[in-house]
Image 1 (cartoon, rainbow, N blue to C red):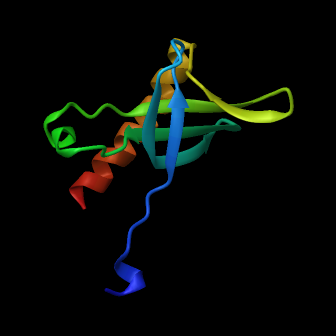
Image 2 (image 1 turned 180 degrees about the vertical axis):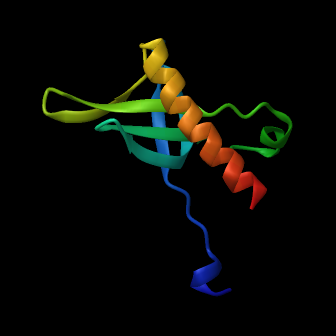
Length: 96
């Protein structure tokens, strides 16, 4: 198989507020209004994945103690703007 046909996703291990770890695949990233945002989908972990709901997770990049971390978006207006942007791009990619 040609190397041109191989796909290696960008995977991130995210830890929720309860300390649970889960793998996510980077779907898209964008700078919006001077801030960096990432849209991620749960990584395919087993065959049951195809039967489960697939929710787009949107996180914001912030610097904390000199280190870049990804955090949830608490501001409703900011979240609406960013999620609309990524949902439109997701829809466009599904139509192609």
